[in-house]
Image (cartoon, rainbow, N blue to C red):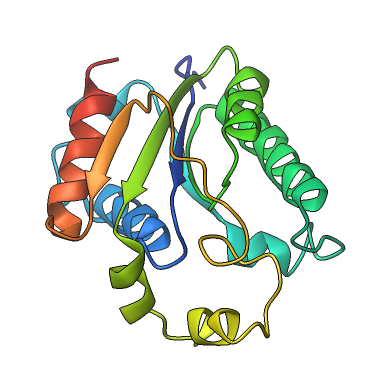
Length: 187
């Protein structure tokens, strides 16, 4: 039995709640599974794909954390360590996290050193994100019922030099996935 040497990669999707991070990560996963897109460049390098979603991790491994700046930092760092372990195993890892602070995203990149790391800013104006709010979080945050809510009572630091910028207010999910996979294929 032989195994191909695999290198992993981390696609770190960051942006406001409702910008489309999870939707894009899940569409990348579906495309990978369905071979909807051409993945010739992946065949020899990636053994699989996993999505690490902020909401999911907060229900489990990060359930002890709140939304203070310190807890957000711990949340991002824990996730970066998990992503690094998975990427070093040869997986393509899509992380869908608000991760509002530049310092924390920079640390995530450092933790994942040795694997390809793509910081993807999922850009969408706040007013549009508010209309995509199925859980009613923005309405509750606007009324002061949710503290430390990114974009309302807590800041979001826009990435200084992301590897990819997606505009989900004017691009389809498919177009965004194409952009990410096109960039990934260059490595």
